[in-house]
Length: 461
Image 1 (cartoon, rainbow, N blue to C red):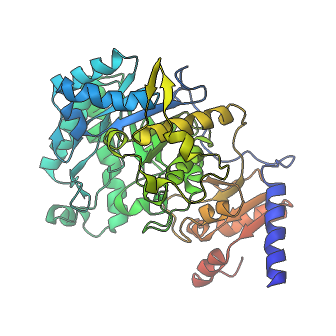
Image 2: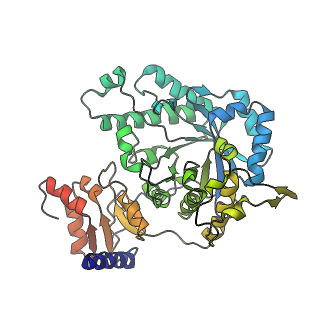
């Protein structure tokens, strides 16, 4: 046991020492170049290092037709949290917000110096196991296009919440799939739908519109439902990143480090086009510290913006004693008692009531830190597109202190490369390993990668 511990310790020290070192004469990393259409850096707003935004579901946007509902709910948020931007959703669960309501809501926020953008959630019934549209169904296709056109009419930018996938297995879809595997069928179907039903119709209505796709945090299983990380980031004007880790012991088993790591991975898919991170309040049941930590980790990735999901949570997720964790009062960086104490804003005394105050405290604390940081670096790990194996292992390694930086192409400029079972998807992985070793550099492989190749009768590793 002692020898095994020392071996692990030596591995950690070696990888950290060698990470990020560029050998002389090495090739450049095979990653997409930054082009001139990159998402712009945040303009000077209420924070120094990033923008803070709120996403509003169609349910709440629809209520904004009543100014007597909108005004007091916005006061709850704005008294506790400084906000730069609002994303107003036009559709969710077959609810389409009408033109007049959207324009009234836009004017309300513009009058208060808040930027606005649009949002779409392509669900038929989220409560019914996230029921999605069937993208080979002609009637569904018409509705998907109609929603995109409706949204582009009102906004120069809109984001697709992370339901732009399909789990439909209707008779129409089964017939359209034919002999294809479901994964291949859905990857092609959703890429086509994104291009022909969302992006092209939206830009025909509004040539200036930017269409952004948000990818959720469960990136290791995207392809099964049609999320295409190979083509999607190149097709859409930008991507957004779900960084919710919530309770790592829940059914997703998403480790805290993912809130940082997945931002870096999506950045490496198309540098300059990852617009920001996205966190909801679902982690507060394990303590308010968990919510704060997700915000911190997201912004430590140096992303230019964060979206807080959602308006209804910021007005309805109330502060309560059970959200104060047992270790509070011992000098932790997030201080619950300071967060809940009355404070002065614009000459008035404000008594915190919801998680909007926790977000404000956390993000302003992070803002001070990120101004002092350089660009993130880490041990480069190769995850080919649509690869499976050793789910989210890099996040577990991050939790023990190994800084991770995941890439969709084999890194050729590093003294150390980490390969997990995911790398087995690359048919040329053995040749890539040989080149790395023959150039005097190191490769660390997991037992999962070795076993995967053993099953393929590959004994070259």
